[in-house]
Image (cartoon, rainbow, N blue to C red; front, side):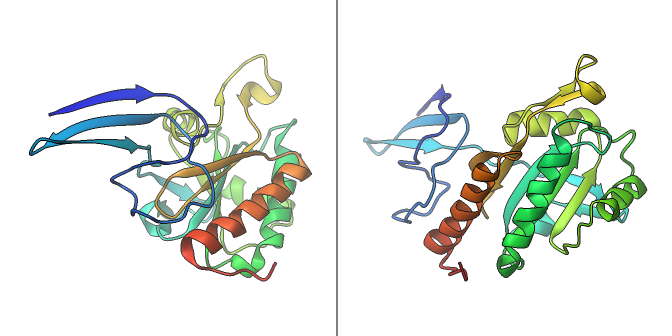
Length: 222
């Protein structure tokens, strides 16, 4: 017999979760709505906290190649949502993400950067490729994605916990947050940072290294 209580609290430390290894040290909190599951087996009652994971997804990248979440499994992700014609927060956000990518070159084999376009009608692969070149981005571990607009907006809001939607009153016709999202190897969101703020991005760099060292035993150079 199971009873499920849906709880919304951001952030909160994981206390008990069947989907996570027991007694594993936690470097950072878990983000997102979670379920508290009450169960009983052979008269023994237990309580588990179940956190959401990023669901499976598939997109075209800047090279018109299909990239799936499964193909990037085993790496820690740093993600944002943007569009190439954005005249407001995207330029400084992409600039900060580029800086972070350079700062974490020593972790390039462990970390996957990804930028999801929220305007796929405009941002076809060749447009993304030109955007990468124009912004001087030279990173093998950074994918730019384009795909179904509605699904991308839902993915951002419901799972990566950043706002992304059409808004005729917003600059460029889309409203979105400047969040950079840190996702662990298992697909759990472990942090959301202001991607236009140097101080927040520096904290993301530190938290990323803390996560890799404490939970995955990877010592960085910094």
